[in-house]
Length: 292
Image (cartoon, rainbow, N blue to C red; front, side, top):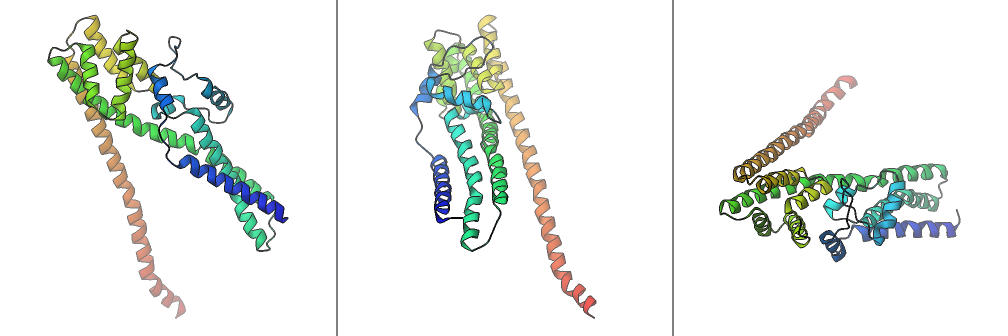
């Protein structure tokens, strides 16, 4: 391999690493996605709300043709743009494709002859594996975000019931309870209620749409409960409190099950450590038996 090829390969590998570091470094939040959430485009009945601005149209088109597709619901929940998601996938794939080049350059400088087929095959395998890493990461983060949202929703329902017990209207109680929280979950609820008030639409319909868009069933439950108060004039105080208690119990049960599962996993390293210690203690005696 000539020196020019080595320099080109090294430059490509360095560029891939620099691009990866640039994407992983936290950046300042963008104002555009927040404004688009406050005024989303109109959608047909039964369809999920999708961003259709020109800046993300190219990402949506390419994402439909690429392996793995585009997890729109999880990206909307995590407030990530399709461009950022695709850039992460491409950057990681390029990193995996160019990683063997570094080893190949080192072997070549040491005078070792390595067939190009081996690093090429390893690079393709690494690129294919790293291509799906952002999908797994987004799915994991979205699951954690939905659990966090469920905790916030339980507190929000309890606060809403408390406000309604003070003879406050249902729509006003929802907004007052949402304004108490400061987390991202409360911010998303506030945005949905503000959009409903601006558009002179039903707040529970806005919550139902948000729950469908982000796959948050707890919001659909709240919308159904509050709709009863509007349509039938029923008192939903007890229903809200019971739903909040049931949701809290479900979350605590899931946490206890996860804690038990994590505790069971700790037995495996302890057992392996005990086996290693037993082998280390018995090895000298066994060696003496075979040397006699």
